[in-house]
Length: 324
Image (tube, rainbow, N blue to C red; front, side, top):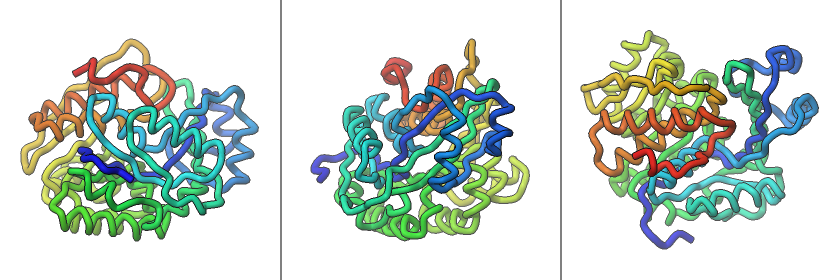
């Protein structure tokens, strides 16, 4: 059980990433939608794995990646998620705790396999994900100790969790608990197709609970079914702080009604965009917790995102506090 104060409690799917470079032809052959995240069953997951060679196996999960990035900046945090009782679950738990992100598997009765996301990276560095949720489907109120939330200053929710009914119930429980204690609540919209699946749920959650929003250009436009400018104006009327990433065009960050465009950081070689949004959030949140200006939060988010896209995987290979 967590018995010390942390700054942020991250809540998300506990996933192991299986990454591989593939050609456009292979992507088309196995019918994986380019640049998206699709949910697959175990049978399809196994079929896709047969088409890839020498993959890299790395603990991942959107909120967990952000937690590791936040800790790498020097933040103190914990993670809530559900793993299975298998070797991938052991790997996820070991790696997260060795990164000094507090995590414990409270519900040991889950028999399903730990979630895995097959991430196929094409020559343009775009990632296409096929995710088998497995044990994450069992994420519920029984999966965590409430002290993880009680002893944090803020909670961060991964939008992918809305793909599981019991997880949705747990999210509202966490939000009600956090709100009753005046803790800030952040939400990442996670993925364009995730927004398409859960638009009404997201709008309801934002209306009632959310203080800080993270989204990319396509996700926020999908949420409101409007153009970028109108969508940003809409979200600014609902939450106090936020960041909208624009890929190679940088990002837009806002505090209340004031917004600012943050210029992109150019790099020599783009290798893999996996985790760019996750790491942007980690930089932004480190600035936010430490009371940086909203523009400084955006710049730090851009720095973290530009670092992670230099190599394969969504976990930083350098100590991110070195880029402060």
